[in-house]
Length: 374
Image (cartoon, rainbow, N blue to C red; front, side):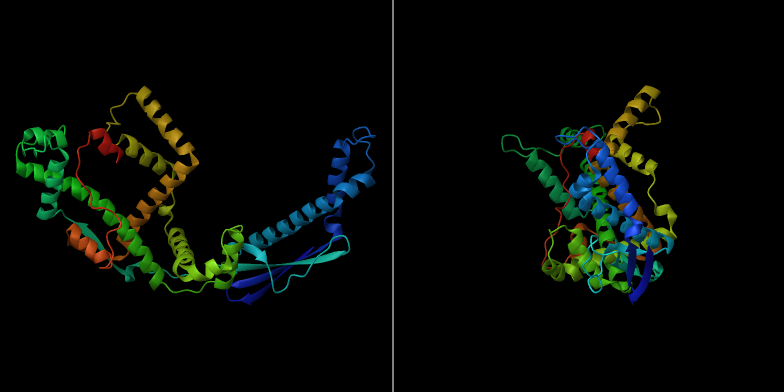
């Protein structure tokens, strides 16, 4: 067996694997012998079916399987041994691959095309971006109070702004006057604004990095790979239509993020970070330090259960990763903090003809448990 690599471009290579029948014939024979030992056919005791009959029945399928395994092993070994940094996975090379037939050919050649990752230079400190510090305006606080009153009407009468209403909206807090009530509403609104601003910062940062960090990619290969990887769900026409605005941007961000992560190992997710996130998400308001051992054990069991669910675990990993990347980029990029209210934030980050993607946070009647779950 022989493996050869040739360049097809700066970020594209062709790998040729030449394989002789002798390279896989023994594996085929051994597998057919196993079939023979297990086979039970009418007129024959188990293990006594003639080898020629077994070969006739299963020879082609076993040969195909063993041949594929040998070629795949050779391809993977070549990639590993030569430290090729590939995008996606290799595809059959359409320019070189010819039909093969193991029954008639003593030697066959298999050709694979591989897309190679480009070298990327990321200088975060030179890329400018705004970070929005959103404060609740008097107008927004007034609107929120009005919605609170509307949502707690009795007999079509709005409730008065008094201690009874204050306690109902913020149980457990000693609010005596309207001024303090307004401050609590502002605090709650701004807590939610932080989440919105963080999400928008990361989205804008990704767009900035993708547009300003220039590098080439093996685009023609990637288009083929998208179609092949979709298992028939995506057509070539779909890829051509969406490549520049969707697929290319996704690949570019993945490469940029990977480059940043390699240079900053602190961004790698740790299991304890996932556990901390789940704990705070479900038990954020509890005094964890004051728990007895039995309660801590029960809590850990709940966290274990959540993280064993593959879908939940993946969602949590994505959230924790986004949080870490956001915090890192805020320190590494050239950030300008912009003080604004929510209306100004929406105008700044969205085109004027578009409406906000998310509704403005609304203060509502909640319990402490519901606040923690949020």
